[in-house]
Amino acid sequence: MKSDQETGFPQISPLGIDGLLVRFADRFDDSANRAALAFRELADEMADVQETSTSLGAVYLRFDPHELPHAALMDRLRGLLAERNWYNAPLPANHRIWRIPTVYGGAHGPQLDATADLAGTDADSAIEELSTARLRVMAIGFAPGFPYLGQLPERWNLPRHDDLKTAVPPGALCLAIRQCVLFPAQSPTGWRHVGSTAFRSFRPDHDQPFLLQPGDEILFPAVPARDFDRLTEAPHGGASCEPAQ
Image 1: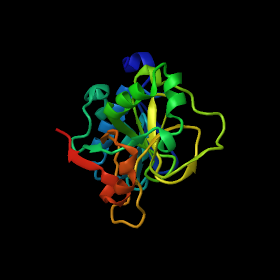
Image 2 (image 1 turned 135 degrees about the horizontal axis):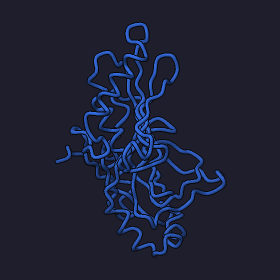
Image 3 (image 1 turned 180 degrees about the horizontal axis):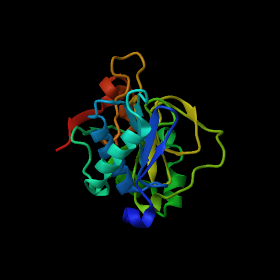
Image 4 (image 1 turned 30 degrees about the vertical axis):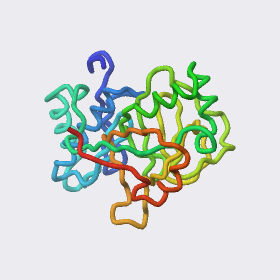
């Protein structure tokens, strides 16, 4: 990532009467995402910041403007931004590694063959590459518990479909623009459906409804289709989770 003198980032902007937005880029960039995740971790420790959230390359902070004027918080944030190169920041210390069993192709991934062809490879090679890729939860958005996962190699920089005629099931693993997404519920989509999991990232009836957090890393190891019914009965769809080393 180029320096702030060259790009104009990071930027701090008011967002409503009680919010500020710290932006690290105006388009997706891996280092900007790392910066946003790391800066949010710091913002969460600020006693007078009431809420934070991240997008692919920005951090939102909500505060009480009666207790803390916009200008005062902006000055403090500028000081924090100047303390280090946030674009080189490590992932949050409390992030986790998930392994989510995935059935690729066939009825569970009906667009795998066409997607692999567009990427200049075959289905078997695509499964090998996708099942061993270590992807980061870059942001949660669009729907509750809906993760944007990346980044895949350049060959997977494929456009989304122009129409939304196809609905994918809960747990669908879909791909486009060097990213994967994991659907928490049935939804129409233009993303390319390459696999299915029994994992549910949003569980509204649980004490912890959101299983994934920005900064977590995920692998989607391939399993045979005959295992899918068993995975639907397993906790978290057969997924495992461990602290990152």
